[in-house]
Length: 313
Length: 313
Image 1 (cartoon, rainbow over the protein chains, first blue to last red):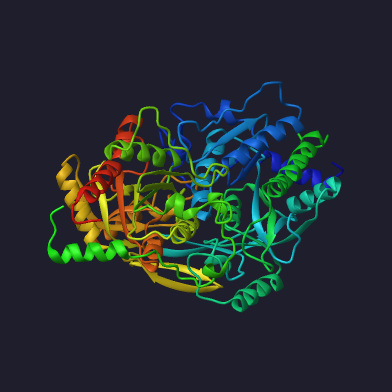
Image 2: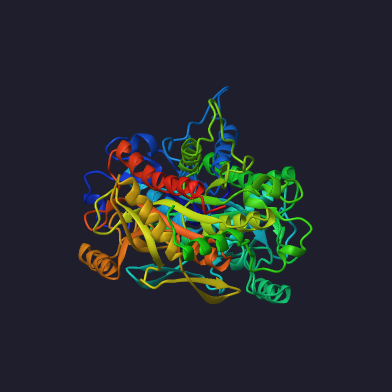
């Protein structure tokens, strides 16, 4: 990767950067059970299992994250004939986790609460494993606004359903607001990777993160709907005017938690449909399957490029 | 089941009660793709597949919901040697669905957004299948407050993290509040079933539904924690004083959506630990596995009792 002296310095700094928890209690715990991963510091050697991890890719579906680890293994020439990638979280069906070389691939289910549980345990896992220089990328699916289906969106800013770059949470009964900053440099690097590949349309835009797929995203086809097509169009057009190019259900808490814990993070989602033109995801299975590979190809290329760059350790 | 004339009338009324959508658009759609179930009205005969369903049980984990259908099949003497229960949602790993006789068992993942997507599509499925007299029960796991681990809580009222019996949602950028009423009669019937069984402690109490498992439930062992043990204890004790006996992550939207669509609904969760005494779920696997069977046994007994009652069609 061609990079200026300043960029190189930044990358080097990043590579030294340890995962930090925002919780002093964890360091004093004798054992830490990561319940939803079915892993514990008392029964698993985290530094040996995960100490070499540099890239963590997360996505909703377990089977997609398994497909991703196979793909990355092949891209990085780390695959061997007949090689399998066992689920590290075998024994639970809450999440699935796979690893090859410096890449960890983890599923997170759907929605903010589901990815938040996973991120709490993932960040503690990386901390216990004494990892440094970690980049975390969500590779997902989304609804697009004003984009051809199949377009990929790299998130500039994750915003809430009121278009604000905030993540609101209730802690001990009180509302807490956190910022949803993502790494600008990483957005640029990923954009360059998409240009290198030149296989599909990629845009940088804001991503709206909602708590519901139907009413929460203005769909007209849920079990409940108390508004009109006109109301929906107005909402989506206002979102477009606010720089929003896609809608999904995990980016805000993902950005907030990674940022708080010093993890370089990005969100790369393919759009399965244009929400200005409809609500139902009714494209043929093969078409949707190919769309879902696009963020994997972009991020696979990014990881390969990072690892082959002479100036990155 | 012994029931008064008034109760019988109520049950008969319930049995005639069709699933109603709160959305006039669905009736006019040529095809309805239930994307996250991988089912469509154009490719599947919903009345033939699901028309006889009377009980829908939902829970977070796919493997637990498969175990439940096996258990219910055996309880209702509907099992045959070597019988398998194929996943009706094969082709997607978002949710898993199983059926035996009048019982449907569906997984919903973790958290409000994940169960909400499933409920939108489940309620439309029941509507398209022209089902009537449906009872929906969530059988789940939870953290208890002031209860012996393994105790089962039947939810009187689902409340939010501020202890209010409300579900707040953002629709088209505006906050909407819905009530989280559950069926009182059903709470009584389930309580009676637990007394019939007499196998484990069961209480009726309020259930707090949060958007996060760590900070959102006052845990001290997440990746982020900016409060003290004392703050946590005060919060949980205030929750106890407000009648809350357990904490989970799905009940409020479950109650709100079922109530809006005329579905008789209940929440039955086992408590895996007493949150006043700790945060980590570190009981041995076999102990937790047995706990998780308790809501299944209670609800399995309830279904069997309902089906054998002479006054219920």
